[in-house]
Length: 236
Image (cartoon, rainbow, N blue to C red; front, side, top):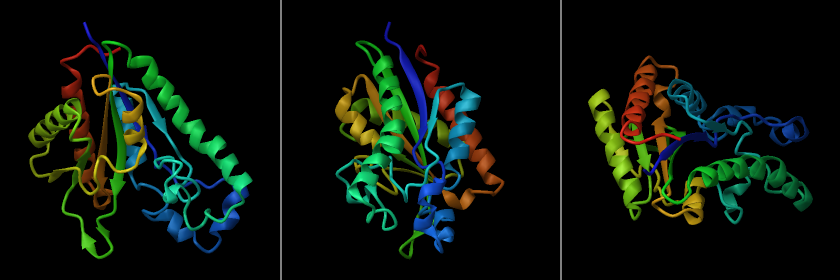
């Protein structure tokens, strides 16, 4: 019988900047504390889901403004305006010390669980700012995936159905506020693993609920929804 394993990650969990690079952000500390520095609240959601569902968790606590582990190496947004001017030797060190050190263990975990008849459902937890460039985002939760991969479509639809049952007041949108096929860690992993062996679903939560009482209900709804989609299969 085929088995499905489940994994939680959070690529933008923190806004920590190592001591050697804090000089890059002198006078820009408020930026680090904003949605540009990290996905506000995403780390807490990821930790809650992993703890309550007893799932493996990988989180990255270094600010994406230093190096963005959710971008491919060829992406111009791999480094921010603050770090783009660093010497190439320093950039190579950042890649090895933070980028590869985060992504490789996740890849190896998936590789170890996505063999032959086995598959992995990877939930990558993110959050988004309620307003960007003057545009108000019109969703509470976004589900991002590749519409060409049937298993991901089925997983997203099943998750949405459960979320609507537990959180009927919450607005859920697919591939919003970003496309699931945009450059990111799940997009990279799809190139490494077949659709029957890997499903990458990014869950985006609106940051307007951070520190509001509704956030606990959203976290609990996500827990119940993920628990429901886990039940029909054997978990490794």
